Image 1 (cartoon, rainbow, N blue to C red):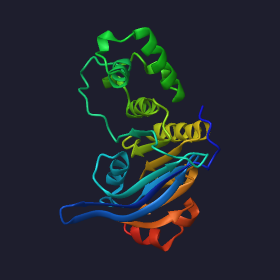
Image 2 (cartoon, rainbow, N blue to C red):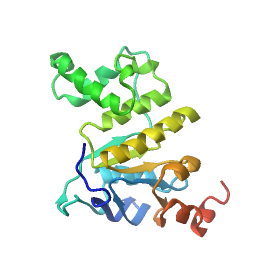
Image 3 (cartoon, rainbow, N blue to C red):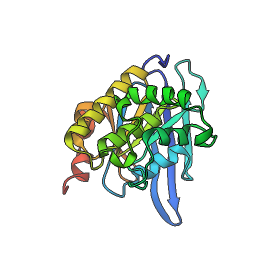
Length: 241
């Protein structure tokens, strides 16, 4: 378990901007998130939400800086976990959940790995998301919700300081949706990590989010769920939706 003191470690996004040619995806994005908190990133399609996550990951060139300070105030490079919207794979392939983890966690060819060691490690990771029973299941046989829990478990090794979730439950049924949010809330508390989540499910965010960032090319509003959901900026963005 992490030894953070809750809400003392911080991740600051400072003056982030992304341009593609003459097109501005977003600009002058600033916010700070704390460990032990779930921060939701919302906004209309085309607001720049996924690109912002990819720029935090370092996959997209951007202006500005990302600064992480631990509970002692030391400036460090954070460990970042990431769960994408979808995983592209051949659904007819015999690849299992264990195979996926072995391919991602080891630099050595899968057939050279110690299956006993890696199996124990994978079981431990899956147990965090209540999915250890899926370890030998074919990826193609998983439901949408089960696959997202597997990807979440994969993002937790190594245990991140900052966990990024890009619409992780898109297309998942309501029961799977609730289970996923409950898991994320448990992780937030148990591991005291900062979580930044893109979501369109405002009902779930109302229940589970600590803070909300309303983004549309820039940050229009940042605060508690009540502050953002009750704001004029929110009404303006979602008026016709």
